[in-house]
Length: 303
Image 1 (cartoon, one colour):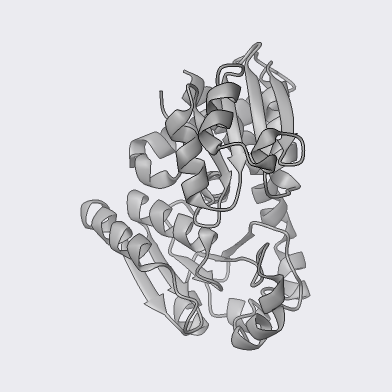
Image 2 (cartoon, helix red, strand yellow):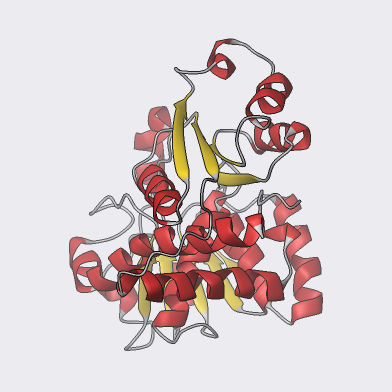
C-alpha cells in the first residue's frame, strides 16, 4: 500500500507513470469512454480547508471511474469536534477504500496516514500541494514544455515546495524568485538538493523576478495571501511589490513561454489581467488536468 503525501516519496519513473495513466484516461474521457477502473471503490474526501477545484475534480473523477465519492467537511465529522486524528483514521479507513484529505498542517495528514488501512492522498497542506504538480506537469507535457526551464515567482509556500520537489526529482532547472523573508523552508531546500544530486536538476534561488524569468520556458506563480493569512494581507501586498507577473516580466521569458497558475488568481496582485487572459487556455487546461491527473493517481494507487 502506498500513500500520496508528497512527491518526495516517489521516483521520477513513478511520477511519469502516474501522469501517463492520467493521460490515457483523459484521452478515453474525451472520447466519452468511461472505463470502470475503480468500480465500487469508495473515496472519502475530508475537507478541513475549503476548495473548488479539489472537491469537483476528485468527486467527478471517482464517479467517472465507476466509484463513489463521499464529501466530509470538518463540520460533519468528529474530527472537527475533538476526536483524535488516529481514531478518525482507524474508523474511516475500515469503511472506505481510499481517502483524500485537504487540511492545514502536514503533520495532521501524516498522522492520519500512519493509522489508515487504505491509501491516503494529500489534497493540500500548508507545506505541500502534490496533486496540483501532477496537473501542472501533465500540462507541460501537453504543451511540449516537459523539459523546459521553469520559473516560479512569488511566495515560498506549499506550491513552491512542490515545484522544488518535482524539479529535483525530474532533473529540471527551476528558478525561484521570492521577496526576502518569504523564501522556501530550509528543510525542503536541503532535501531537494539531495534529490538534485542524483537527477542533475538545477535549483536557483533569487530575490529578483527578472533573473528568474529570463529565457524561461514555463513561468508560474500563486496567490500572495493564502488561506489563513488574511490578517497579513496589507503587509504582504507591500512586501511583494514588483513580483506581479505582468507583460513586462513575461516579455523576458521565451516568446512561446507557458504561464501556469493553480488558481484562484487575483488580478492586479500576483498576475496582471493581460497576462492571465492571454494565457487563459493554458491556465484552464491546467485546471482541467486536476481531474485527469488525479484519476491517474487514484487508479495507480489502487492497482
